[in-house]
Length: 260
Ligand SMILES: NC(=O)c1ccc[n+]([C@@H]2O[C@H](COP(=O)([O-])OP(=O)(O)OC[C@H]3O[C@@H](n4cnc5c(N)ncnc54)[C@H](OP(=O)(O)O)[C@@H]3O)[C@@H](O)[C@H]2O)c1
Image (tube, rainbow, N blue to C red):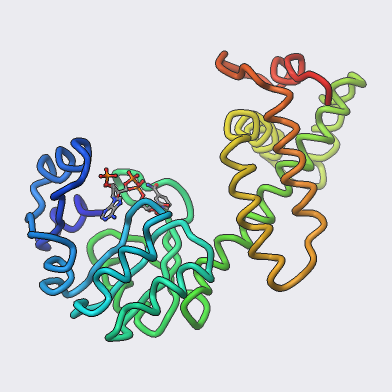
């Protein structure tokens, strides 16, 4: 993000005193302007972007809350209730809940959802190559949409995993993928296989994410499907305890899983 802004001629401020060697090196190599501390950054900036370790998002907001002059944007991967708590500390009330819908890459093509009264202010960064979309109405909506999307996409991945594993053991996986492609559309086979392989690699991260999504959904409904999604990822973790090797096809992964 800083790189894009610097390329566009924007001054980017940060504070790295007390931070790790890695963070200080990254800031130095980018050429961002150093401030005394995050309070100083907040006082001097038109827009403050909080992109920190998720566990400290609330603490950081509380620390700078009285000093933020411009718009404060929280892009951290945290639950809607946590983002609301963090943003409640920003005394000028100019706050934005932002949810990054994937991995940040150098071209910054990843979509960022934004909600809250000041979301349109944040979306002005689209002039610098960001891909921000204002969605929902209030603070918490962007983070909620990200979690709801995860509930759906990871649920589909878990269902695919289980169904394809059963088909593989029956020797019917090739036929099943062909039949499903007829209803699910061209490219389904590749997408399905990619989902199964990435579910194997990222099972631990997905399991942890599903636990967070589960507690979020529980504020509104009693989730059943999501519990099964979590359980499926837990089973994949147990079944693939030494996933260090490179798996390129789902058959090798399925040959490797035990006890499922
Ligand atoms: N990168 C992505 O693609 C992506 C995608 C979606 C969401 N996000 C969210 O964006 C946030 C940042 O992600 P990231 O990948 O940049 O994480 P990261 O590489 O782990 O960086 C986190 C930064 O926060 C700093 N930090 C930790 N505690 C702090 C504190 N108390 N005050 C000030 N700074 C502090 C860390 O400094 P130290 O090095 O000293 O610990 C580090 O520089 C996370 O909340 C993440 O969930 C990132």
